[in-house]
Image 1 (cartoon, protein in one colour):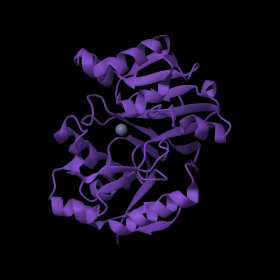
Image 2: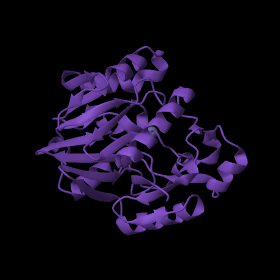
Image 3: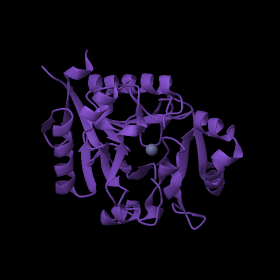
Length: 283
Ligand SMILES: [Zn+2]
């Protein structure tokens, strides 16, 4: 199967998008129509996308390596690929699971987004972390205190161990955040089934224990994709944030194919708004 044969379907919207410029325009208009919160239900899984970034977010073309500059500029003609900083709330079986918590900046939209659907921080039962970068765990703390006072926190043992082995100056936020949640912290192995019937899957490369999560017909892909306009067509291209680039490329290719083969709707922390995406094969 050739990547260029893929077309992209904005899940739940029935929009077939061509690559490059056209898809960026369609994504931009989708954002305008859908605001910054969008819920999709597939089977028993009700998943809500919540955009955290208040200002528009682009991933600059200079971040992307591994392809001709001309190709990148053709796919991303505005100097950067449309993106978001996003979280996802899963409601299933009477429980609420939050996937990542974004930056926790002063203008963060995560808590207002949760409030808009009637969810308070103390209503979150579980937090499943894709990886330890600040734009994923920053929202766990405010003024030095845990934001989610009832949540049990889950992270891959490989991610935890990988970060703890890093020099002190790189892991300060990780150490302080995990200490604050230490009485409620759980480390899992890849392949484990977590509460809510969510399966944690190994997607190492972006970070030492980067995890994607399968929740029914959803696949929460964390940071497999930073610049959708570029990397869906060229998954061999890495954003400079990918710590182990060969492994990140392998994971990106593996899970794009898996999502397509299984007909899954991807939920991505940096996909353009609304950050759900279903791939289909062009006939
Ligand atoms: Zn990220």
